Amino acid sequence: MIRKNCCKKNEIRQKGMTLIELLIVIAIIGALSAIAYPSYQEHILKSHRASIISDMMKIQLALEQHRTQNGSYDYTIVAAGKCASNLGCQNDTDRYKLSIVSGSSGINLYTIKATPQSTQGQTKDKCGILEMNAGSVGSANKDNIAVDGCWN
Image 1 (cartoon, one colour):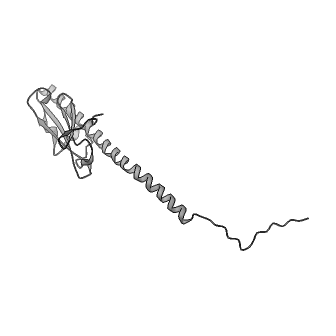
Image 2 (cartoon, rainbow, N blue to C red; image 1 turned 90 degrees about the vertical axis):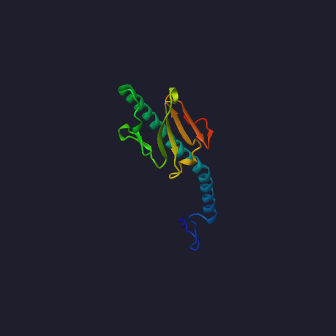
Image 3 (cartoon, rainbow, N blue to C red; image 1 turned 45 degrees about the vertical axis):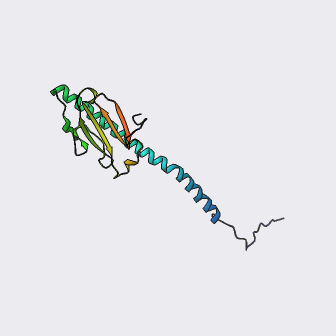
């Protein structure tokens, strides 16, 4: 006996996704994006903050080295908002402008200051202005209010 398997000739098989399934996928992607994007932005701001802190430490080392060798500080290693090219600083002047403020004595002999710029949105960083004095003490303030946890 020979069996014959045959299909209905008019049977239509559905392939692909329905509109409802597509809308569900889009909604899930939207929800995940709404959660992930702010976290991503915070990470970017924090990475640029870490980079400028590293540059501030390079500047401080160069200042102290110059003082050890020559008896005085060379405040010209920071000009036009960035440090001298021989220091290997990574700062982007669209994110932070660097400056050195000379002081009177002790740990206030000088202060290295990094001011966030609005060009690339660094002003949205919770830490605001970063400062490091001659005693390697770092501080941060946003709108003249001290902010903790920025030098970690």
